[in-house]
Length: 312
Image 1: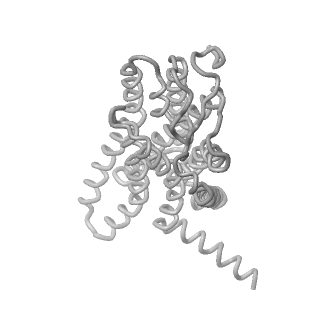
Image 2: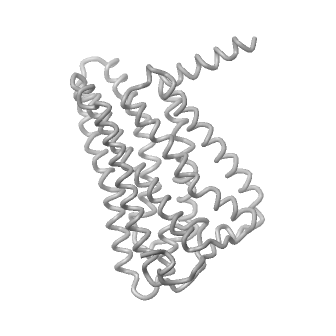
Image 3: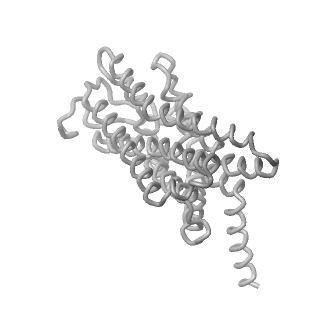
């Protein structure tokens, strides 16, 4: 089945922020600045980890993958959003819209499962420290990351085929990119089966890794509370606090978007939530990890000091 044979209009119109056109120049500058800052911040984190042997551990391997996913995730949407700010309503072909939805879901779902893999890493590091290096071998880490990408690709493909193989009775998408919820509004007839499919896939893609994270942190917190010294407790918790903040940001906004019925959908609220988890979260991830991680701060500080000495 090819996209050209699927039912519905051959192209769509992304309405974006059409009701606030006077704000487009300001929003363009803000979003472009945030996009560049996010690219730089995540690239610096990934480059720092890959070029420093002391950071070649499972936790930092996963952090590198998170930075790469954030870059790809953001790049799948921001160009269309910026185009919307410049020209107003954007016309987008069905094939391009389908590809955008696929990559948005691919990178987003892969990040959900990657955050779960990172929680497993922290679980074994805190709860089973003596066996940590054996359990979290490089082969296991690569396998977990491959599994994240496979799940992301599967969910993206299933959602895209379900949506674009359904009869569509309109071409105006009240959003700034090809998102699931606005496209559901264009479905003809009874949309309940499609809504249930979206929720079921969301339960798998969002709720199941989130439950794994909760399970891991229940055991982590229990182990930390049973540690003998306050210093050990503080050290153990410091290795998990950054990950917990990132999980809260990502799952809080993504879950509130997808784990709710269509009857509660509001275009303005959904656009705000989409901007939160698609723009702000990728920017905040490297900031959280760099500010709350002593090793990353130490290495970045040393490199900054070294450049300063060379300059002088």
